[in-house]
Length: 419
Ligand SMILES: Cc1cc2nc3c(=O)[nH]c(=O)nc-3n(C[C@H](O)[C@H](O)[C@H](O)COP(=O)(O)OP(=O)(O)OC[C@H]3O[C@@H](n4cnc5c(N)ncnc54)[C@H](O)[C@@H]3O)c2cc1C
Image (cartoon, rainbow, N blue to C red):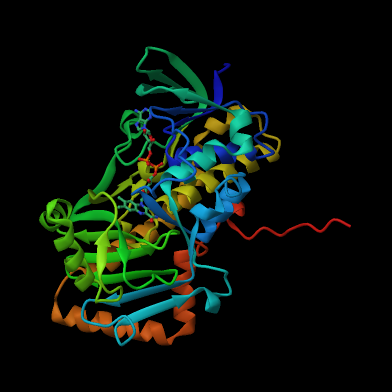
C-alpha cells in the first residue's frame, strides 16, 4: 500500500531533529519522503543575547554526526565553548591532589574534549541544515493516537488528521506518548535527586575546563561558557535543590563557592535558576514492526556524565546506517518497516546504551554516599586511574563518545584529496 510518508519522526527535539537531518542528507535515503511531527517547532534564537539556561556538553562523536548532516557548520563559532581539560574530584579529596582525576585533550591527541552549546542553538542548526530544509516536511501538531499495522503505521493528530508512514520513529522524549501507544514497557527508577541549574560569574577564570566535584548528595559541575561564565549542574536532594532555587542569590553563591572547594573564588549568580527531577529509565524494546524508538524515549540517564543527548544522537546515526545499508543492498523502501531490520538497530544500540546507563548509574551510587569504605575505594580508584595514562585514555574515549561500536557518521571522516 502507498503511505503519506516513508519515514515519520514523532517529536522534533534535539534527537528527532537530528534523525530527520541525517535521513535527509543520506544518499541511499534520497528517494524517501520524510516528515517530522513536533508540537512546538523552534524559533530562531537571537544572534546576540544572553546564554540560555539549557546547555549540553556535546561529545566529539556528536560533533561528527552534526557535521555529517550539515548542522555543525551552521552553528555560530562564538556560541561554541570548547573545553580542553576536565577535573573530577571526590568530596574528601582536592582538585589537584589525591582523590582527583584530570583529563586533558593534549594527551588524547584531540583538539578539545567537547563543546558546551546551548540546546536551542543546536536545535536551530539542525532545522537549518541544508538537507533538512530541502527535504523534511515539518508538521506542527500533536500526536494523540498511533496504530501499528505491521507494514506501516498511522498517526492521528490532535487536529483530527491521520497520517500514514512506512516507518514511524518515536523521538518524543522521556515521557514518550508514542512509546506508550506502541505498547512498549519501561523499567527504571526515580533518583532521590534533582538537578539544579544556573549560570555563575566567577572571580577566577574557568580556564576552558569542565570541573566536577562529587559531594555526598550528588555531583556539582561547573561547565565553561563562551562568555567566561560557568554553567552549573548541581545534583542534590530535592529539598536542597528547592532551597537553591528559592533562597537569596547571594547566600546560594557563597554556599556554591564553598561546595566547589574555592576553585573559583567568589561567585555571583548570573542567570535565572531552575531544577529538574531525575530518573533512570529504559524501554524494554526499541522497536516493533513499523516502529522504532530513539533518544530519551528509549533511555534517559543521570546528567552527571553529560551523555543523555549524545547517546540519542548515536541512536540516530545507527538507525540511519541500518536503513541506508538495507536500501544500498537493493531492497525496496517497503522493507524499512520489517522487524528483522529494526531489530538490527535495537541489538546494536540497546547493548551500547545498557553499558552506558549501568556505568553512569554505578558512578552515581559509588560517589553519592558517605560510607567510609566506599570513600576509601573512591579515593584509591581516582588516584589509581589518574596515574595510568591507559586508563585515562579509556575513560576519555567514553567522554568523547568515541568508545564502543560507532556508526560511520560518528567516526573520523577521511577527507578525499582532489588532484
Ligand atoms: C539538567 C540536565 C542537564 C543535561 N545535560 C546534558 C549534557 O550536558 N549532555 C547530554 O548529552 N545530555 C544532557 N542532558 C540530557 C538531555 O537534555 C536529554 O537527553 C535530551 O534533551 C533528550 O532529547 P530528546 O530529543 O530525546 O527528547 P526531548 O528533548 O524531550 O524532546 C522531545 C520532543 O518531542 C516533542 N513531543 C513530545 N510529545 C509530543 C507529542 N505528543 N506530539 C508531538 N510532539 C511531541 C516535544 O515537544 C519535544 O520537542 C541533560 C539533562 C538535564 C535534565
